[in-house]
Length: 180
Image (cartoon, rainbow, N blue to C red):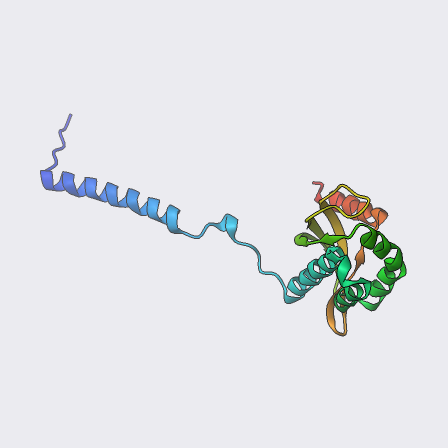
């Protein structure tokens, strides 16, 4: 068997190379961008439609009974489509009566969870709603809902909340698309 000998200098250089390689690998792992935290680039339409869905939902749930129904409707309708505004106006008297009787003052925080579906002129968003107190007749301060944002001549606007059958159809479609 042949003996291999290393000088102190060569031993030092080998150990230094191993140490620097290990330190380099550690630094790259520690300071390199993490791919798991990178989000895909969203289209401008997606950003604006999400904002419309969130702002319209917040305007609907943000209630100050002392400010009056007209102020609430004016704010909501400024963020909504004409049909969305008309739909809310149909039930506004009944809603507002409950709000006044309960002296309602509710702050709402709304966060978009995900875009559920999209076309060139419509986007459905799943949103989380957090209320400072429950609405009259309810005990919930947290709600998950689906909203429709529509592209109009004036840009993206909140249109309406989806009905339960529409939500179920969307969920079923998503489940079918996600099956292997």
